[in-house]
Length: 282
Ligand code: C2E
Ligand code: MG
Ligand code: MG
Ligand code: MG
Image 1 (tube, rainbow, N blue to C red):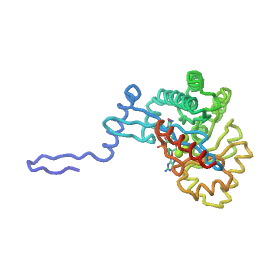
Image 2: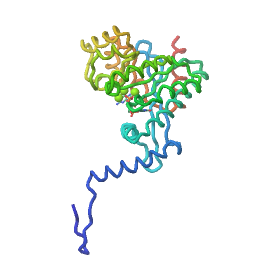
Image 3: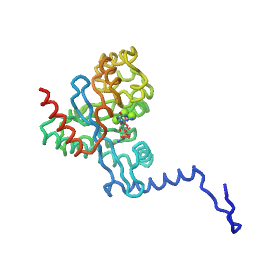
Image 4: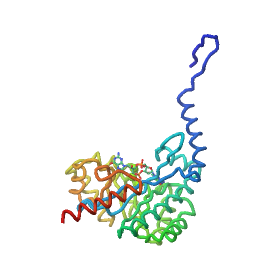
């Protein structure tokens, strides 16, 4: 589209497609420098036991704050980092920072929280992953059993045979493995039998679509338990959802109802308050 200007020339407007492409290019260039310029931080979201409502662990969620573009959501920059081959370096930073933070938190407060770190498809295919995990544990001193790696169904299914091998290597280190966003992809329980997985994380959309007293939810949780998997529900926003999941014998939950992802300092306050309210009630 062009608009005639008074002087007889035309001013061209950028179509939406071009604007999107331009932003991608700008973000790509900025992403290269984000790590060294310390623009990444981790937020932590508590994961609670659905019966006692106690915090058992936290999920590390990456945040990118750019001086010019502001805060960029992970759903925008993670796929970009994957495509541009930067996820390996970024993912390695996340692993080290998360292990370090939770180890020091546990030490300072006498806790035994575990931490979950998201691992993308490309990281899973990288020959460096196992060594990166081993090094992050060794350098932080976090016990391997306190680290959980979250993988998605689609990443695992891309090459199931290779996934089995990598997962076995990771299990040999002693870490826990979970399937993230379960219910959004293939959602077949059969391939789970082949994988050394410990935890199934039900996706937020799945949780929202299956209301209280739902036989499907109950059966799914039951089947997961038969496979010796512990079940975590993501994105619990309302008490009713929490109760439905608890009735379906889901083990743990995560969501705004309990707490939002927050910086480490806020997590410390949250845990201190949680501890105080528990000892008050006794
Ligand atoms: P995810 O691993 O499934 O993480 C859960 C997402 O749900 C987070 O979004 C979290 O903030 C959001 N969430 C938690 N509770 C609620 C709730 O009650 N309601 C709603 N509406 N949302 C809730 P976030 O932080 O924007 O992260 C989005 C995705 O980006 C993550 O999904 C994960 O796939 C990816 N991601 C985040 N950090 C990393 C990372 O360090 N590495 C990799 N590879 N991926 C990451
Ligand atoms: Mg996750
Ligand atoms: Mg998820
Ligand atoms: Mg998700």
